[in-house]
Length: 332
Ligand SMILES: Cc1ncc(C[n+]2csc(CCOP(=O)(O)OP(=O)(O)O)c2C)c(N)n1
Ligand SMILES: [Mg+2]
Figure 1: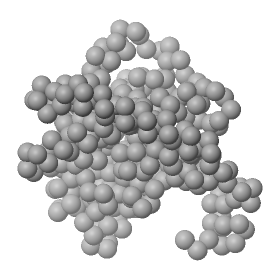
Figure 2: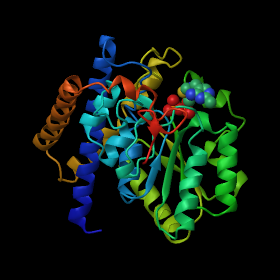
Figure 3: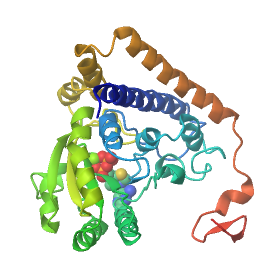
Figure 4: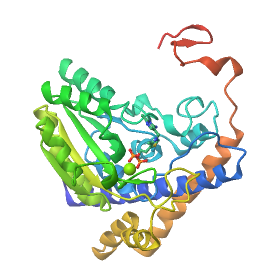
């Protein structure tokens, strides 16, 4: 890649991370009012480099699928902040028509295949997308993100086994933030290193530093290219950290202040900003302008969501259990 396009890409990664962070800060404020956002809401703050780096290593038509901590994944793929905020508000203009909420973002146009609330449930879907790509002779790669809490679920093993057996073009990414709700990974796994989980399926496996967006992009890029030309699954552990509680109702008392402070010093946004500044491609003014833009987009998304209409009452049962729209069989 030409040096100027690398700089452009990295500035893009930085503004994406800023947008995710500012969007979620606004979302948290709106949630805390108590009257606007219903259901669960899990913030991605601290983990932004994982998605910014990995999306930079892929093509826009590569499939992307994740669990419920999905705001960053949609925003990084280009789903608008407006439709993401409207989805939190349960409005008809949301990316899932206001019927999914925080955990079920979806944007088929951008190959963002959800937002899935049940741990491990989406892994067989990822294997299915990868099977479809191979069967149709398309060179689309599937990126399947999950938390460290997903690796002991039955569906995990079935999905990885089949992907390994059929040599499917899927990269399973464990966003290891070390906690499943309040349980540390060491308390739920006999494995000391999550990266070793790939060995049971004969998958090439790597560990990547998830607090460094460049490391994520550069670690994944060769893997993506290999998988694209020679379909086969990979297992990737990306070590990261969430700064907030598991969900909005979790004060996170199971972590020490020292641990939080240690990771706050490793903030992935500050890291990329410093790398670019040290290399002379970013100034404080430019950074401030990028940050202001991110804040403005996030603030405007709240207004958009407030002013958007609710879905009609008749839509209440659409897309649930049976594929109907307004009581009639759905056509798409
Ligand atoms: C099958 C299933 N069991 C339990 C839950 C409840 N639950 C929601 S989130 C969560 C923790 C998952 O942690 P992890 O996979 O590490 O993801 P993270 O929250 O760290 O992103 C659990 C147990 C669930 N959603 N699905
Ligand atoms: Mg976790």
